[in-house]
Length: 342
Image 1 (cartoon, helix red, strand yellow):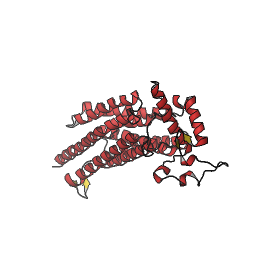
Image 2: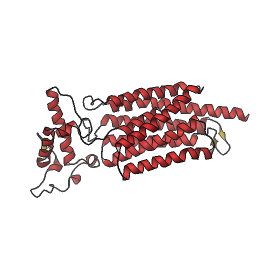
Image 3: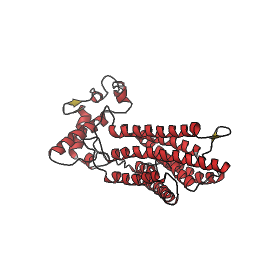
Image 4: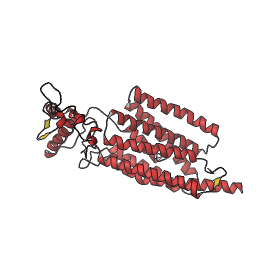
């Protein structure tokens, strides 16, 4: 199951991230009035936006805004409306802070401060770090099996879960990549890609948990385990992408798969005498504790670091430890098989 043992947790939590469309902030009459005025005048206070400048006939000056903005802004789809929302939010939060009010959510999100057009810069950086740790873990696993451990005739490894862990590594890196993109700019496409990637990884780690914990080696048995899970996950992804992005349903699916595979690994760790089982215990317990960060859900400190960012930070050492366990498992299984062959 990979990171998502504890990653089952991260993925469960990634799936659970609420994408609400109405919050206390955007219901505020002062905020709404600011946005409405900005979309008419193109300004919030002394700050004006080039793509909000209109001629009397309503057409933008100098051509469409996407031909006027730098590339790093253009690809993020910032337009007059989104810029007005962002700067009105900052202005309103400054007013609330002066009178001692706490931050509130706007359009389902806490008020984050952007950096070069990036919506949640800390979460983006942490997602990128997790991606690099995943790559390092997968690469070290690949080198171990192909260059350090004995190979069978035909250059095949003795470890019977090699292919499964390679698939996991690819899916995990893909998931963190889209997590970084989504936190960089939250639009419908990036949201669906992030959700779909997380669900695909969660489904595969669920399969991995069953196959490794129950030591399923027969190919036919593996297909019987994987086929219904793959069919269900594929159907769920198609439903979210092309029918309805149902956050409540997605939450139930993620929680069920995440909790079940977490229990599988916890029981396996408790009854198994694997020499590196302590690493798995740390991953499972650490992931469980990290889950509390998502439950707390506090506003971002200075507009940058929120509970989800801290949760992503905890995944970095847990991911490193998880891949260490996978390498230890590969060495142990290879050694055991070689002893039986002698």
